[in-house]
Image (cartoon, rainbow, N blue to C red; front, side, top):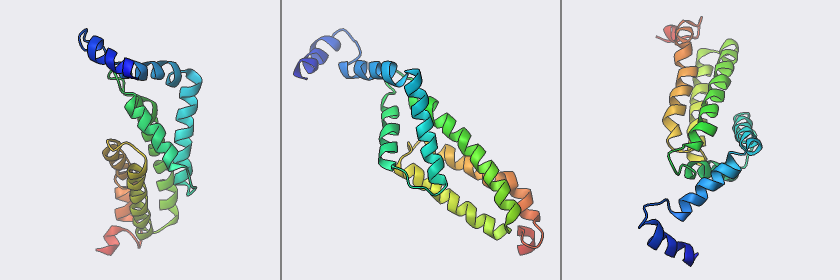
Length: 169
């Protein structure tokens, strides 16, 4: 370790190279994380964990957070692994999940029940960000969930027979 620190201080800085730590992170990313099987399986397991939690199952939040933090830390040379390998597919699956759930729940419940469910889901997603997602995901996730659960159904919520917002006024 001392040899690497000495090399960083006396060779890397003088020659304006990447630090030994950053080179190691880059190599770990290229060899391990970008391996086709590892990358695909890791993404699949992470997305499955979120899906299971949304269904009320208990997941290992600590492990999920550790893996997601690792993806954030691997952003050494401007390549955002967290965003490309997790956040984008996560947001897409979130959109599909809430689109389907909102249609089903709205068709079987009153406006008041639906709004209560929306509040619960928004709180669950906020907790998810707090417990294991990267903080920069919060606004994207909140906007997406509000769009799928509220904006996409605003007209229906207003006009629901006997229970819509117009009836409440």
